[in-house]
Image 1 (cartoon, rainbow, N blue to C red):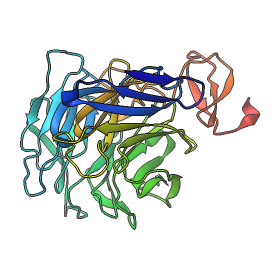
Image 2: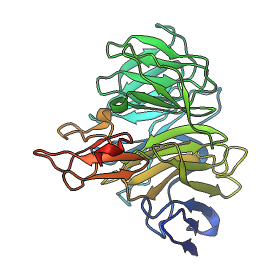
Image 3: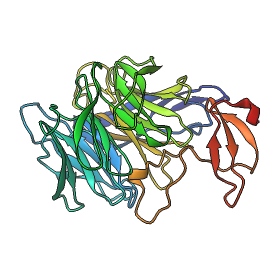
Image 4: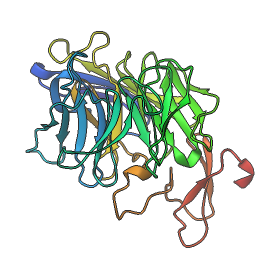
Length: 364
């Protein structure tokens, strides 16, 4: 049964979509501008373990994610599945991945994995292509947790410690920021020269020309257990809260506009103690990048949204023209307020392009 109450403001949906043997429900409070009324959370792959690191190959739609095991074993599998193929039930792509956690699929379809003491890139066939960073080669880190890639091959990453690490395009590793608390999910938005970091709460740090990060500023403080994060093409942030078992949706101004709370059944699919669901990370994929894939207790989930995810330059498939960040088609010359910011369409040969005005109302 589905209960859905719709208005222009935040809404509430209680979804019960699976049989009793594998039942879960999600409580969703999202505006109609982001999600169509009645939309259900789908349980894509059921695994009796805690899972992490969803990422999508935008060339073919394949979703990769990691299955977490005991800290004493290195055999943490990387899964792959094609959700568009009903005959694909998923498979362990790599069985012993050196405790892989966060993943990223680049524009060439190569899978990059944050592992114990290193960052490794795999070819499509599962063989190692390159080791992009190693602990002790410029800075020391433990089990790499999450990372965010730049268009030139540089990237930032965390290891659940007090630092953020940076690897430049030449492969040199250094500490970019220190004195943080449980640095976890990270999202580098190159076009705005900022990094969003899940560390106690979501924080915004400016990127300096040498790759170091400037003074942190609080962005959103409504999380109890910040984990992974993602951004859509309108500048809304999707912040995974491990402790609350939910994804907070926050606009570009840092104001919460809704959330998705995953409520797993107790038993074999409740792999971690605490809030049933323990959602840890999310990533956009699907034919139009409007599918939000999430991981946590019980495996892999998805939710169809109206707004596509941001197309990061590093993930853009070969031969595809990169999009402007947060671009959306509007009439040429018209300015409007959306997601806490002012926008104006560009004149010229591409009238569908827009640029941000950052609240400059004089441009209206």
